Amino acid sequence: MQVKRETLVKALQFANLGTSARGETLEQSNSFIFKEGKLITFNDEILTISESPLDFTAAVLADDFVKLMEKFPDEYLEINLKGEEVIIKGKRRSAGITCFHEIQLPYDAVPAPSDWSKLSENTLKMLVLAAHTCGKDVTQALTMVVHTTPKLIEASDNFRLFRANLNTGFPGEVLLPALSVLKLDGLDIKRVSIAEGWAHFRTASKQVIALRCSQGKYHEGIDKLLDIGKADKVNLPKNLSEIVSRTIVMMDAEQEPRIKIKLAPDELTVESRKDSGWYREKKRIEYMGGEMEFEVSPKFLVEILQQTREVLVNESNRMKIETEGIQFIVALYKPEKKEDATE
Image (tube, rainbow, N blue to C red; front, side, top):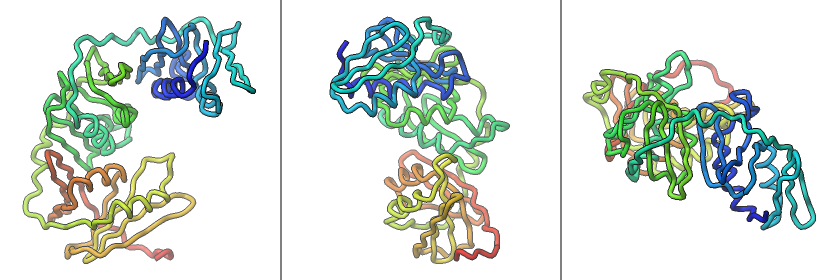
């Protein structure tokens, strides 16, 4: 059959959110499943279901298929199933990918969604910001999830706390794994449904992505942490977003994205570091407190700066940003005194 390459690439990129690198999670979890007009992927944590641009039934290795489709320059391709291969033909080029006729991926173990609820306009944005506040310590499970209810979204890594008060559109309370939530970033999600340990999200084009979730209890007593008492106002620089854009060049893409912010009398420093280098930029600000520093996701910081540049810092070394239903608390720490030949 003939298919428009761009349409196929977009479908594969969405489905790729639910694959695993080498299929070590489940049999065929590294594959695209084409079956009964649907394109399906499942890695035991994320399930995707969308309309298939192709009309055959087979399991095809995801990594090879995506890379080939992204490299073919043809606007239209002829793609057919022939024996144990999927054959792709352009004007002067062709390729074949091994496929499997037997579908073994247990995607039907995921309960189907029932009633769909409409997400509020800012819910997805708040979910992603909360996910950037989470940690990665597997021994502290609650630091790795986003707590979501019909009225709020919050997350904490025990050093930072994010809360957004809004009508989310969620029909109930769930704990969503932060790493899975980040997969939603950039999708045009409009609806949500919760079913037996899974949160299903549906895009405007009817694509569905489901995240494994929990309905366990979240931290109690968080409300009292949101009040930091008497605090001094500090205005962050107007061009801090530009500074951040330069700083992220020296961030390790394979590690958790974090930049370091340092406060000192009359000065703010933004710094990043990786094995092959580092970057540091200083900016004058009106601040007369002690030397403090914290780490933050650059994406999170840029999003917050679009709404406010005002932060509050108290004598207990806590900083708070508050704007339009969002509250973000971070525990500041004093920098270690050490010789640094790079100063």
